[in-house]
Image 1 (cartoon, one colour):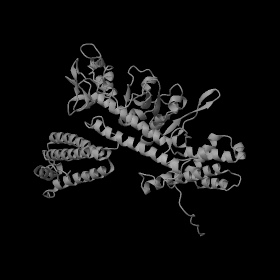
Image 2 (image 1 turned 90 degrees about the vertical axis):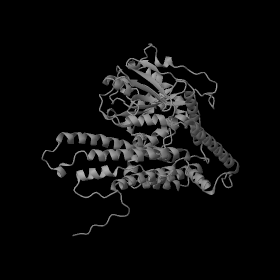
Image 3 (image 1 turned 30 degrees about the vertical axis):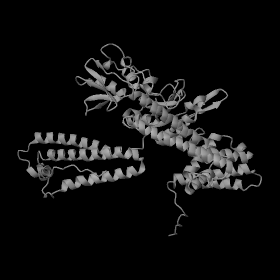
Length: 571
């Protein structure tokens, strides 16, 4: 798609320039500046197209066109505003229209706010195709089906490669693999910790299968919503309408609702949309249960909004896969402290069928000031949890928080370690890994199993945590593997250093400040011993490779330079 430039009012631009500058206006200068900005946006759009699936190209083009059009309108309005009252340096102070200047400055502020909103379109272009397929996309079901088919094909290809390797003990000549792919898989297997590595380990297949199930469920949900006839209603002072085109439940008030009502609407996920003059939220099956809890929009009939919905009975909305009641969904609670303190108005538990939707809602709330506020200590003597992300089973029998924000820091909640159903489910581990990778944890408040039960431990930085649950290469995990290996190969070391947690903490300190070279060197010395069996020797080799990769991943340490320090000369 070619770039469309919208007209710039050169007459207004010249008048604005002359009213605020002594220099002569260069004809066409405003148009030149505008086209330069649009060209930069077009370059960004082309780069994004190369990174994402072609199905997203049309959306990128639409965002680019919206940017070009809205930017032209914004600049033309700015030129008209700037031409209203000349600068005092140009007009002089005598009889200067101060009141008109104040109005002009107010109009400029509003225009600048609009410009800032327009710049957010560039961020949206960068995010297209990177954060999942939005339910607002009219082609969402088609795109999800295409993605599902692609993932199923990848699953079968990975299983076929594993079968070929199991039979032939080599990847050479494997059908469907290029030379580069074979070499990449061989490199991954060489770095593996496992005694008998495979081209694609079980967790890779499990994770991909979990995504397949998640997408299939989302297709089912979107199909069901699309084929269900929802009903609007009238409430005191307004009405609720279903907007299928925008995929929104919209609330229209006769007048501006008071501050308490506005605050309640925001707490339940409704947002003000000036373009349509309504408070709105994404249309799905849960939104009506949320509306049940807002007294200000209670239907005049006295029924609940969820009770008013007319369900269209159809046999066509059948899932492509059997319903799996153990499938996992996510939830977000804007402020868990309202639950812990039994506040009069508790933040709602908002459920999401996909990680992308839950993360988008989490990101929307994460920047709110209350998440960084100091709180009074809870009964355990810790700050209260505010914004919370959690996981819930499809049958509603199991649920656990996985991330809580406390005084501005993201805490990993390790409740899953004490619930067998969660800790043994690869889907839950995948959700934890994605949370660590895409949102990030700062600290961990963990527990340790003892004879008397689960005992709490002091919280630690996530990077220092000995994490045996899901794949995350932290310094703590590398240090714990190193410590266990040394204890296994040297019983005397185990007797002299029995405090595992303390020793791991010291090793993490060494990795952070002295590098990992000395640790890898000590393992190399152990590996040279003649009394080791081959299995232990192979494990040592893999640990040494892991330490080297860790060193490459973290890069040079602060304050460290290569080579010897220069010798100081005597004066």
